[in-house]
Length: 209
Image (tube, rainbow, N blue to C red; front, top):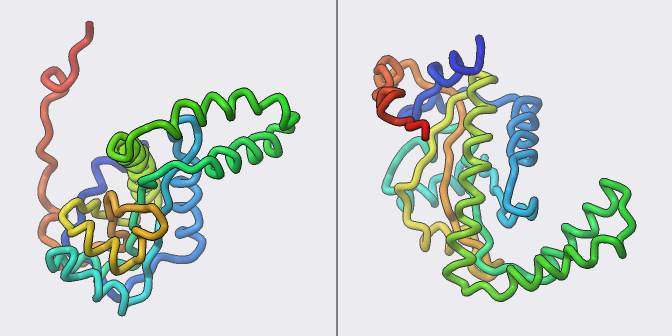
């Protein structure tokens, strides 16, 4: 299949087969796709929690408005954006950049100072909006990777973020639940898999200027 075939194959799975699990090798490929996703300045100011523990999934069910994809999926990906940028976040990135690209650390200090001057002064609301936007880029890469492996996914915005943050102890880590994604394999009983996609026509969606 080509890339468009994969996009046509995937859909927001409403009912997962709870008995079918993602192979560890496929899970690593999905994680790597998310890791390689671009982010602003390359800072990756988010963390992805991968929940496979059934008891924890059940705790999150009510906070997910009883959407059973959360429980029945193989793995629940919880994308958590940083609500605050710390100097150490930037220092870690600069240090990693130096090691990966074999640049002398002192040559990158100016760029590090630029990032700190721009990012550490942001208001908390502005920071949260900005880091949340980064999460959605990573989410898109996750769903595409899943489709190429013929693994199903369902992105979910319908959940109580405050309850998720409490259950997962995110507030003290200066993180917030931005979006969640159930990943696994569709159930044969999921009738929505047979529905055609409803999308705007290309000439309506796109405008060339």
